[in-house]
Every structure is written in C-alpha cells, then in structure tokens.
Length: 73
Ligand SMILES: [Zn+2]
Figure (spheres, rainbow, N blue to C red):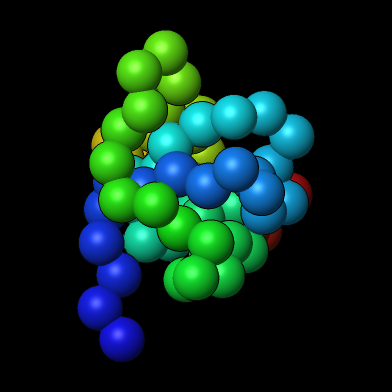
C-alpha cells in the first residue's frame, strides 16, 4: 500500500499533540491507520518532532580514547 507524506490526522495516533508527519519510520505516524490519514500540512500545525528526528543526521558518537584496549579495563 502506498503511503503519502506528509499527512496528518485528527486522531493523533499515539501522539499527544497535533502535528503532521513526514517520515515513514515515525512510530506515531505508523500508529495512525491509513483510513484516518489526511494528506497535507494543515496551517498552524507543527511538523512532528519524531519525524524531525528521523530526518536529522545521526549524531556522531564521541571518539574512544585511542590507547584504551580491553586488556587495560
Ligand atoms: Zn511523526
């Protein structure tokens, strides 16, 4: 089944605030049944923060200290 993005829903799924969804991996978006999805971005609604996180590049992990080996731990 094709899923169109962005979409919004008055049922919110498992979300607690009104927001429109833009990313297929968003768990809130996935919780909204297809029949309750409305394609588009309603005026005044923010983009879902979880969708924004999925779109953002992953933060780099801090570098390990190069001289630390397992034997020293
Ligand atoms: Zn979302």
